[in-house]
Length: 312
Ligand SMILES: O=C(O)CCC(=O)C(=O)O
Ligand SMILES: [Fe+2]
Image (cartoon, rainbow, N blue to C red; front, side, top):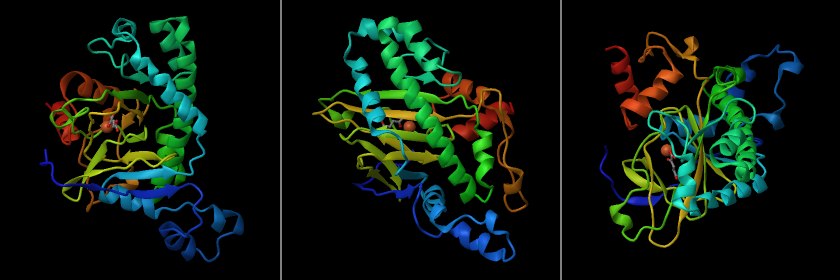
């Protein structure tokens, strides 16, 4: 683990859905096709800005998503429902995650219709249907947004708009609600500790308390919350850690985009060549998830460790 260095404020690149700017892709692909029929040319004002995700992913693996169209009222309701954490422990323990299982008190799976709502009702009872409905709706909004981000990432990798969106269609993504109570000795505690998410893309909404730090340019940098903006962590997502403080509780909602459980994860053939040979063997997402839940605590070397484990 890299040693914690100086902390500074870090402003990641922003990406907006409707930024009215020419992009690298516009210039290199559309510009060279002089005889392209007009219906295939992306109207200038609708072209996405690709520099931001390209730069962010190559450099530090984190960018902000603004102008995303997610209802701020829904994000607000999702945060208010986290008052769940103020309930008696015995109440919360009704949803306790069991060893070897992936859903429970602190994480839940999204996939089939109403699975989140049903989950809340089945483990907590009918009184919690409202929570379930809010998080169901939140997951659906995150799923829509994450597929739009996947389109941008696909374009930025010159794979085309559909490639990654199709790859993650019908995904078995995960929602995690994080609650960090105030800590009398914040210097001795570290939220969940430094880690890199093992999933393809994380869309995180942190409240305005602040505490998320990312490791970039050889130091820990605080990611100051921007109202209405989501933090996106992508590809081999950067090392990050939530830190706690001694005054205010802090909350965040993380949506981890995963493929379908039984999907074979394999590199896009268009990206593999002699200069860029493949590094990891094919695997099923379910096997990787099992590895991270039962055999290995995620860190920066998770994929290498998984790859070795698979080939044993
Ligand atoms: O709470 C945060 O800001 C980050 C949470 C996080 O990194 C995670 O849940 O994986
Ligand atoms: Fe994380």
